[in-house]
Length: 260
Image (cartoon, rainbow, N blue to C red; front, side, top):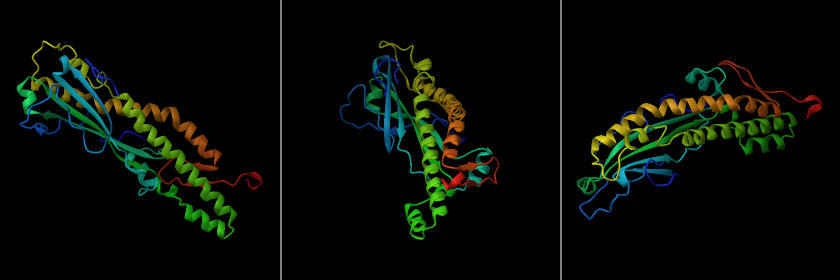
């Protein structure tokens, strides 16, 4: 359901990622006087951030979360299950990571080095069959087609249930990431304010996060699905919508006894 297969903490020593390390040399500094420790620039469309400082701020790692896209209804349930290889999938959230060292020349001359990483939600895929508009409901009501109206409203409710589940995947992934789970504390936590920090320290921290982020997010997604897929199906059944396993499954509306 969540965690793509391509898959705020306070400042302080080890406070508050990751595909292979991104390009080194992101230019964030200037020839002007540099404040120390220097500000680390956000990724584009950052919606949340955690800055971790070590060695009295001489080593910094910024973790960003970018804004989630709107739910995408371009894939059918069959395509979602085929692409993910999961015959029980009800939706899919693709969350990816990237990271890089950050070049701030004036700060580096003074012995301050920085890196950054971003958790990016690439897509939140909801089955096309659940993309029911209010206009469709109103049209069914205008035709006085009670059966169609009830079915469309049930599909709308299930759409909202699946969207809520998928957005929770993003929250769970974000909450799972920290200086501890990304290994930044391991690589930088032993540095003191008297330590000499180098670019290599940041590169090692970025590489450590790259090795740990995807497994951590995958485990988090698996646990959330294990916790919520059963209750999600129960919520859908409460709307009289039933979905079988397999690529050819459909969202079946079963009229409640007595017409509901």
